[in-house]
Length: 391
Ligand code: CAA
Image 1 (cartoon, protein in one colour):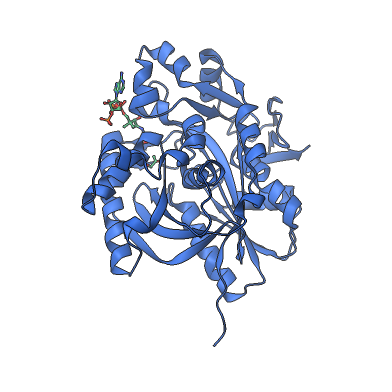
Image 2 (cartoon, protein in one colour; image 1 turned 135 degrees about the vertical axis):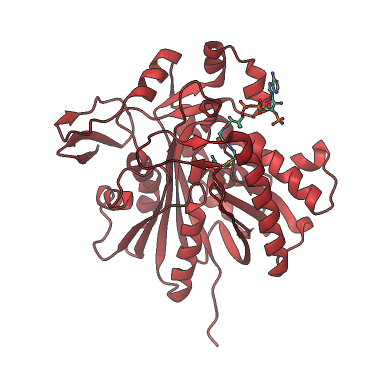
């Protein structure tokens, strides 16, 4: 019988936007007690895309360091996960493929199921690598989260991309079987094709997320998964960081464990560093939690981590990963912290103006102002085509 190698995340690189809006600024504008944001939802600030940034520029920025470190020879598949798609037909991944100069002998596809898409991408990638362990798959999660101005959702916006290189003998985390999966047809959050901003039933979405946590755990257990006690940490999808605590407390309660503050914090607090200051990055969020955990926790070598990926609508998956010996030598902590710290703070008026911008739909020639200091930009819209530039 052939030996099945360990397969999982070999490298992880994140990118975020040029601008940031502190929640204190939003609170000063709308008269909300800032404690509601800082404590109530657990958010300090949110990333705001520049006029010339979008899911493609963020994705290319996240993935470029992975290609620089590992080359692209063994990458035959690129999976682009997003729920803020820019085209109904063409995969945003094809633009990234071009910007990064990836080999033409590759397949590229875009996946969608709200914030769950990247996890579907990761699982598909594992299947491909299992079939041919010499191949690697680039999975990119990239999203710009946008709700209506002056709506309750406004405080839970954000934007980021995470690129994952999936391979055999991964340097960071081996992804285990089984998974616990859950699907329910609910209208908690959605974005019809004709809208820029998402529609959401906020409180219904929290309930739907908690139901999905239960459903996933039930299936995970039935599939022969680990005991809750085995896990050193829990990476949850974090639309706002307080949601991870709500979800974890729910899981502890559902599995008959103590739900006090200490228990809820254990294995969670080191997962929230990026999401707390970046905001909701939809599909990227659970993998930002992983980056935060690996970079901030004491040595996790050999330890099991639980992942809970939730996408409204809704589909969710719970699975485990084990941390590879020597993982710390492969982290990108300095670059990631720089990406967060280099953002320029916006005042409320500048944020509002960016939020209200929309691209013309008449096919005219439309140059886009140069705002981003990042390596890739959306330079223009011309004849209904997006024109990207690498610097
Ligand atoms: N100091 C401290 N805490 C305060 C406070 C203050 N001054 N004022 C209020 N709070 C607390 C509240 O008690 C509440 O805490 P609990 O949830 O623990 O009870 C918290 O702050 C939020 O207050 P509200 O519920 O009154 O806030 P809201 O009605 O404005 O809505 C929200 C909050 C529902 C998250 C809203 O921002 C929203 O709709 N966001 C978008 C949807 C979303 O993120 N849903 C998450 C699950 S769905 C998902 O995960 C997929 C996805 O990415 C979208």
